[in-house]
Length: 98
Picture 1 (cartoon, rainbow, N blue to C red):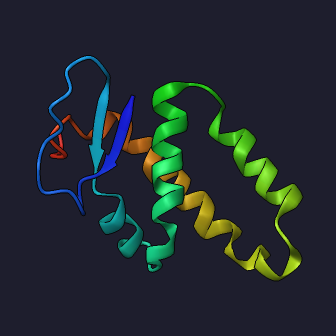
Picture 2: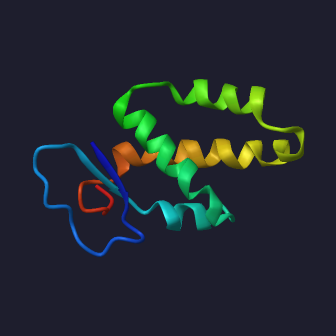
């Protein structure tokens, strides 16, 4: 499986033996107001596409383990995870909305 940021990559993947999801993660993070949320967008997509772990489990882990000084970012992290999860059904292999 390959999940890549279509915001930063200007060519399509050539592999045909794996599932590929190109999402504009950087652009999505910017619409959320914080470009540092790009990794959380990608994580949401990965979790949803792979099914390896529910997004809700990661949300709970953030609540349980995020240092107090970063708790103000919880809601933004949750939104980024959900936006990434939504991308699994919204975007095709070439990074364009289906």
